[in-house]
Image 1: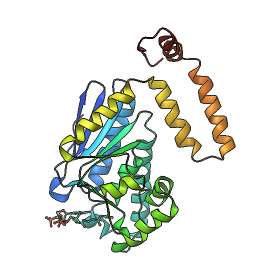
Image 2 (image 1 turned 90 degrees about the horizontal axis):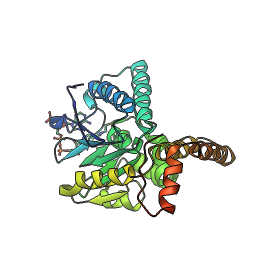
Image 3 (image 1 turned 90 degrees about the vertical axis):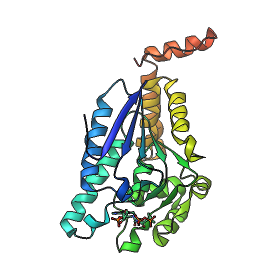
Length: 260
Ligand code: COA
């Protein structure tokens, strides 16, 4: 499928989605959001895709936020609808059933930071900047930033970022646990692909169920989360991959997983 504001390429099980509005620092207008939704639905259903990498075009921005020219004319009802639709799209990304790596190549502000947080893992280039500057515009984060940021970095730091609206550097984002890795910009995509391949060497169903246990478990009590974990653990024990993975270890050879 082809899109106006995104490009998508696939190599050896890795899909790379690039948001392309570099003249507006890849700001998320409604067209981008609709295309992202359609693109991720297609990637979810494509069994040949094992890991997705999301990045922004150019060397300056991952995504510099929701498109402020659209925000400027939002009505109350339109604002609510936009927030709900954006939350749905980011929820789709978070629960895609396969890992999504954000390769953050520059500004990740507002909706850009929220998009990165909906991804499973985040790698940042050294020039990346993260922030939730919405209060500077008289609004609050609307794509679940108020919910995902405290879960990632803790309530105190999340409130500091959300209430001051000030961005943090990639190194600071790493220090507070907002990103997994910081690399030079020239090595960003290579590092993201290397991380993707590390995950792809593991059992696809195990990867999927582990993400389900973490994502859904986070919404439950610890006891309910443990019950879910035990159920998914049992489900893993029904798979060919579990037989292959354990046998391969005992036979001292690499496992060949089939995702069944
Ligand atoms: N929405 C719409 N357009 C945006 C945008 C956004 N979130 N962020 C940047 N742009 C546009 C600018 O208006 C400018 O367009 P123009 O050339 O037609 O005037 C272009 O992208 C380049 O941005 P510019 O501000 O000139 O770049 P800069 O290097 O001086 O500053 C930022 C970069 C990221 C600091 C600055 O663009 C910025 O603060 N953007 C808004 C960030 C924000 O508040 N995001 C949250 C929205 S909820």
